[in-house]
Image 1 (cartoon, rainbow, N blue to C red):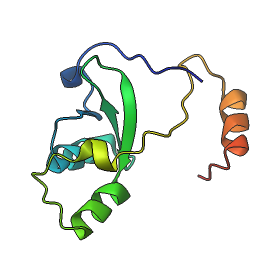
Image 2 (cartoon, helix red, strand yellow):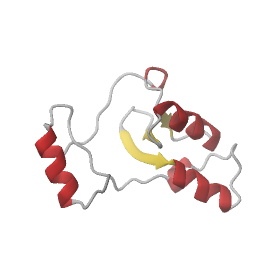
Image 3 (cartoon, helix red, strand yellow):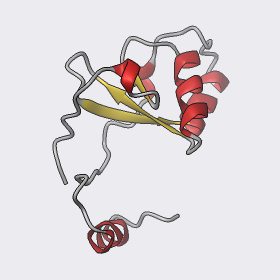
Image 4 (tube, rainbow, N blue to C red):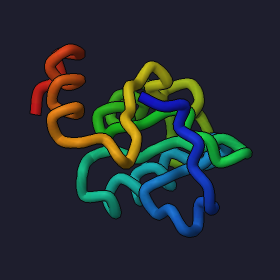
Length: 102
């Protein structure tokens, strides 16, 4: 696992959103990813959370508009990640340890 330093900027990371962006921006990023998830970066481009299409749905059900800027309130900041060099066995072991189902 790592601390999630990224690099580059949001424009070069179409599946990422900034903390100050709208729910609509998140929907667009999730649509681009094709995986049902967008990653949230802070001002220094550090990965600080993730949002799923389910998170967006729940926010809308709670009367948040697509123009609201509530990403920091609804994102999951308690996530687990691996480095880009992680092998498939390491990833699968971590998924089993954390009871991640695919």
